[in-house]
Length: 91
Image (cartoon, rainbow, N blue to C red; front, side, top):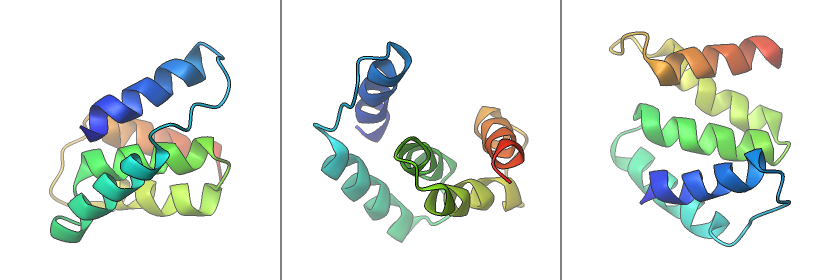
């Protein structure tokens, strides 16, 4: 569900359709529920990091992306590469 809601937001962002905030509350609630049970979940951290980055809250986004990059038990997957790229671009 988190992926699907984030995907809808991505479509609006990349197609430059303006703000699409219909599911913001659900994106945040689902992401936070997942992270309560599994704080290092790379997908939840990616969705929340991207959410906050697009809202202009770089400090909040940075905290989620750092969790992904600093995780010891994940290989360099797409989410790790995207998180590192965002961190490099937003120092």
